[in-house]
Length: 161
Image 1 (cartoon, helix red, strand yellow):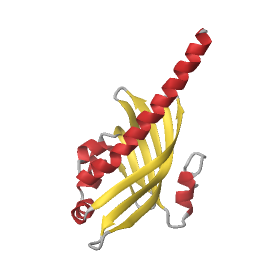
Image 2: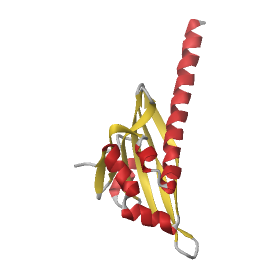
Image 3: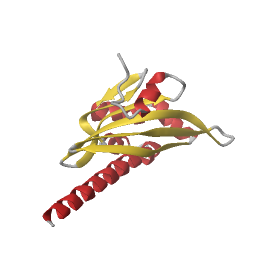
Image 4: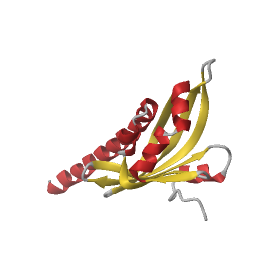
C-alpha cells in the first residue's frame, strides 16, 4: 500500500511539474505582446540566458528585458504582433527539465497577419524556490538550417561546435 501511494505521489508530482512548465512557457507570448519586459525576464533565473541561434545571446534579467524594450520589438508591437508558442514536449528529471516546441510570431502587415518568424525552441528549466524558471532558451529559425532540427530532436539539443 505504501508503495502504491509513493508511486501515485511521484506520478502526480511529474504531472504538476509538466503543467507548471507549460504554464511558464505559455506566459511568454502574452508578456512579449503587451511589452511587460520585467515580468517576461522574471520567467528566467537571474543568470538565465536567451539564445537566438546565429544572432546573439541575452544573459540575465536586464539583457533579456532589453530585448522587449528595444526598438525592434517595440516596432513589432506598434505594427501589431502575436507571439504563439507550443504545444511543448516536456521531460522532467528531478529539479531539472527540458522542453521542445515551436514558436510563431505573427505580424500585422496592414492587410492582415502574416507569419513573421517561425522557429524551433529548446527550453532548459530548473526548479527554484519561486517555482520553475528558464535557465536557457535556444531559438532557431526553421529556415532549413540544421540548428532548428537539432533543437527539436529528442537529444540534448546542442548544436555541434
